[in-house]
Image 1 (tube, rainbow, N blue to C red):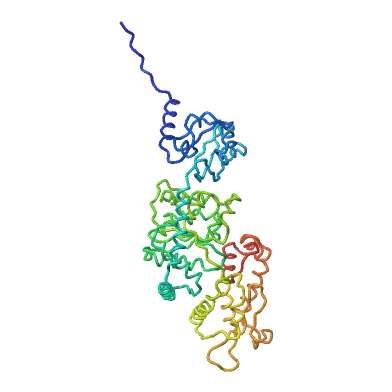
Image 2 (cartoon, rainbow, N blue to C red; image 1 turned 180 degrees about the horizontal axis):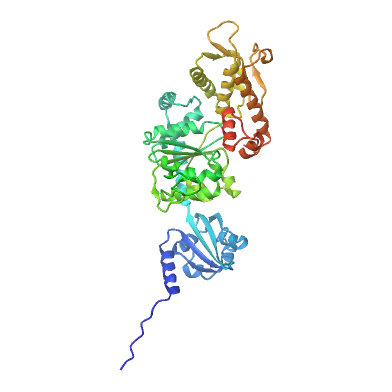
Length: 479
């Protein structure tokens, strides 16, 4: 009689290995697992394809060898083995692919025992961006004169004034992408009008009836950023609302979310924002249930995000997620044709706001047109407002008032030939306070490399410092 076979019960280790095998085989990312010396233990089929090696060849070597052979160029795992910390970088593979690779160390009882790396193929995204840029260039070249004029007439009814050809091309590009869901990144110096253009994209889009939520990433203190932007549930932290609070992301539902100064996002917040953009879900602070979101994202920055990535201050994967349609906004000194319309519109705003009619002295136009405006549109508008508030009645009795003086960011007065000497007349208190505030902010900005340093010098909060920079069109020394 034969002896019956014994039933084998899989161990926990066997089950874990089976689960890991399934995860490796089904993952969309390209996964590689090494030991503490860099020897490759396991890999996903996708990793074999992207690096051009068989499974047997890949799992019989080390990351150091593959880096020396140029297969891993460079190896993200060796970075982790050297530093003991997570790492992220771009790779070029022998198969001609551009991949974003990141790796995490695995510790047990204080010892590094494994490194898990994953890479995502960005070649198709890069190609799409290049094709899109080429298509935009061709469309710009084919844009007929009457189409440009029609666009300018439409813009004249909105909040932006465009007369220069370079800005008409920018506006035409933004109009074409307005009805898509693609993320737009507005690039340009501080004060060039990125917020106004973001609002215009929103008005052109199918989401125009929805909200436009504007978040200045540099104006919200890091300690409050998560609760303000992602929201929180009741009791999430000391002082939290009893009923909880939806974050600004949720408030953008059905509309447009505009992240200004996106380069200032704290790294911890960058990781959480990336998850929201990948999954379309947001988790309030202290919550366990994610909420579905539907908004269109526009971001803006006056910094070089690629350099921020190289410096380790901005996540590379988030950079590629945001940099889908980059649009450069030229500074005002490169589009002086727009200055007259900007001046006229600002004068209309000021006359309406303050209930008087004032006009620019024609002898000031030369200086307005020739000034470089380092603070761009914002500086021009703030200079006009200061000039409006400090101007005198025209001595020749002409209709309205004339702007007798304007002041540049440097603090040097720009005067018309017959402008009054301010020293001969005492200004009112509001004007004197405005001038004093401007002079103090200018001096402090020259020696401050961040809005936090500026706030400390002025003895005010960081959000107040940001507002005063914008109000006066002043930039920090390194911006």
